[in-house]
Image (cartoon, rainbow, N blue to C red; front, side, top):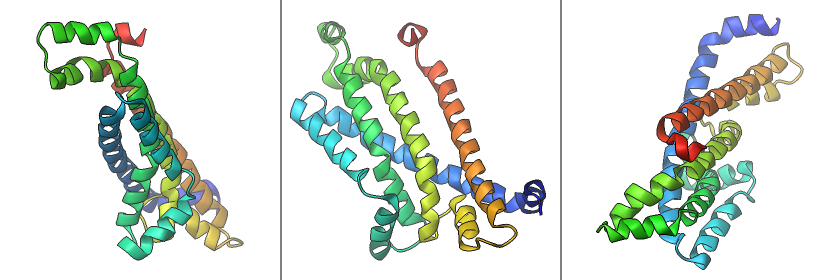
Length: 215
């Protein structure tokens, strides 16, 4: 069976796997973004605290993804829970690092001007600092998403959702007539999803970053 014939026969299952893959990556990125930005906001004013947050989240990346999911299985079981926990942890570093860098890079004179017109600390953060730090934060989100697209394939090891199931099925049946088609379909599907997500982030950047800041 040719690759195109395989796609035609399995398109419904592949679309389902692709939807699940995109969904779990998107949800984990939402969690990683919320946690990462909060960590950045809490630590950027202190050199040691910011370095600690960056170091702690970078340490997670030293743990192989297969080992991370394997360690989580006895604690939370199979399926979605270990997938969500692992992907959220892996997605933190770029968001935390870029949040700290972006917030530290805000012009102090702008913060002083906001303070001078009576803005509270929360208002300065929400209306001045975070909007100006948004471009590097968005870049961190884009980097994290690209990483998680690939890492999410390992979730199939723990019966997780996504295109990794197609890849693992192919690897488990090497030598059969459709093994290569399965691996290729899963891999190309992940690449296409990664490109679509990145294109969506470009659009988000165009809509949310003022032209003066982009320039």
